Length: 325
Ligand code: ES4
Ligand code: ZN
Image (cartoon, rainbow, N blue to C red):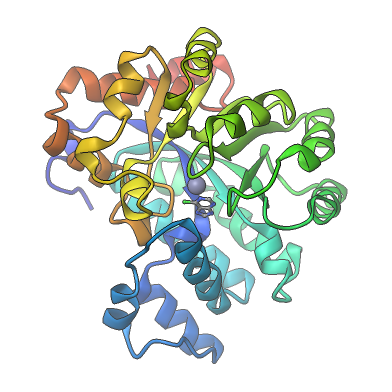
C-alpha cells in the first residue's frame, strides 16, 4: 500500500537489514501462538515497551530471545514476505538481506528449514513485490570462528543460494579468527561485508578491511574518530551502510541531531542509509528518510545522492546497478 509521500521517494536499495530484525511484535505473537511457544511478555504493547535499549547487547538479548517463535520453514517464509511487502512500500527495489544461521542452529532449528523458508520467497520476490534480492549469511562475532566455518561449509555443501557473508552480533574481541571463514567465502565466489565501528573503535574497521577483506562495512560510524582511516575509506570508495535510527536507539550516538552522517558525507565517504532491525529501531528506510529530513533538513538532492549510493554500494553487477541510476 502506498504510504504518504511515497511517490516522492527515490527508488533505493536496502543493504543493511537483518531479517530477524524485521519481526514485528504482532507477528511474533501470532507465531508464538501457532507454535505453542511462550513469550515472556503479556501482549504486543508489553513487548514493544521492552524496546528501550541501553546498548547493543541489551538489544541483542531481546533479538535472540524473540527468535524462539521462528520454528518452521513457513515461519521464515512469512517473515520474509512481511518484510518485502513493507520494503516495497518504502520504495525499496533491491534488498540484500542478512540472516543469522547460527542463532537458529543453536536453538535446534536446522539450516535447511531456515534457508528453504527464506529462499522460497526470495526466488519470486521481483515478480511478487518488485524487489530483487540477494541473501547474505551473517556469522556471529561473539561465537567461535570454528562454528562459523562449519556453518559456511554446510551452506556451501548444500548449495544454499547465498550471495555473500557478513559478520554481526556483539562487536567484541578481534575479528581476526574469522579470517579463514572470509577467505573460504571469497574462494567460493561469495561477497563479503562485516559490521565494524558500531560500538567498537576505528581499529575494528581497519581489521575487517585488512584481515577479512571486507568489501563493505556495516555501520562504520566510529571510523570518523580516525582521520587516516577516513582518508582511506574515501580514497577506496568503501561503501558504509549507516543506520542512523539504530545508532540512536542503541545509544551509539546521543541523538539523531548529533549523528555523524552529515560529516561522513562531507568527508567524501561512500555512505548510504539503512534500517538494520526495523521492527526494533523505529522504522523502515522510508522512516529513516523522514527522520533525516526532519532533523537535518535533507533536500531532494541529498536524498537522491543517498539513494544512488545504496545501489552503487550493492553487490549487484555493474549493469544491474546502472539500471537503477
Ligand atoms: C545487529 Cl544493530 C546490530 N549490530 C550487530 N549485530 C546485529 N545483529 C542484528 N542487529
Ligand atoms: Zn546490523
